[in-house]
Image 1 (cartoon, rainbow, N blue to C red):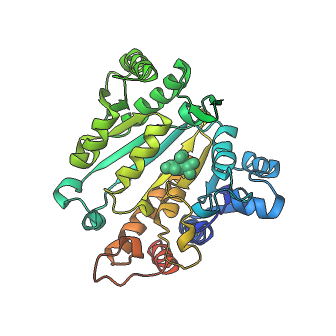
Image 2 (cartoon, protein in one colour; image 1 turned 45 degrees about the vertical axis):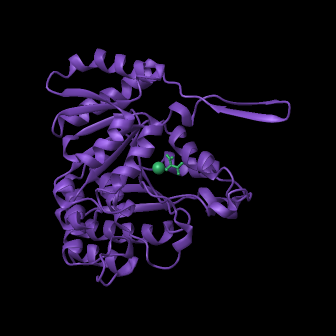
Image 3 (cartoon, helix red, strand yellow; image 1 turned 90 degrees about the vertical axis):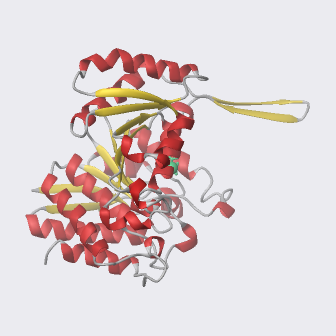
Length: 359
Ligand code: IPM
Ligand code: MG
């Protein structure tokens, strides 16, 4: 089959890890007889260099006419946060893309492969077998809420607001219940309903919807407790459903189970099933261009694209098992190398994964 992918290579380590995702896609295409056609589009710092804006209309057009979007990380060094090239890039490019395609459902699988159990700073008996899916709301909440500022007697006060409508909660709650049906059939809602009224609304909507999924159980945790439970007893979780902000924080935390932020992929979907696929990590400008970045999150994002946008389950699974066999063979970028391991380059790990996919 033929598929068109809008390709946004991203900033910092984006181009190097994207290259390895393309290598894996090539290999899987050869093995299974598919043609993945990529169309380059620009956003973030790279788009600023070329066109003087972070999210050009032409990029949205290319994304719109593709079957899926594969995206590297965007953003620049913290020290250059206020330069025109980098200022506001996350809001304009990343949030802009999420909003433009209404990609409200963000799926962040946290899987601890047996090959990487030893990489986690947590004890093996705690992380072994952990397998959770964070379902993060991605197009509303405090990221998109009303903002304001007032100055009283020279002192500035600035605010952001958390707001959710019933409809916004309902659609992602349905998504979470449906995806739970394909897994261990349990949803944990994470919010802060002892303090926040918007969290009470999440609980209300979830209780109203839950009877439509009698085969799926659900429970509730306050976010502070959930943050603790994720590292104290991660195996208790199947699907974690949460808002935009809590999902951002908890997914970075949960990546520690998998050994490195460089291991976690994500999918962001809209109601029509259109998706954008990206690693959960950032652009790591401090190590860009050195060939030390871990390409696995980007490669696994491509696997999620095959599974969710192209319905190529066997092909997605083949990439995942190629990643595991490269890890089992001891190939490690520095972020996942144990003391005494010889770390390999981004390219070397990418090649090993592609090799495991076949000639
Ligand atoms: C993520 C990132 C983004 C977010 C940033 C870069 C805007 O941290 O995808 O988790 O906060 O959503
Ligand atoms: Mg984040």
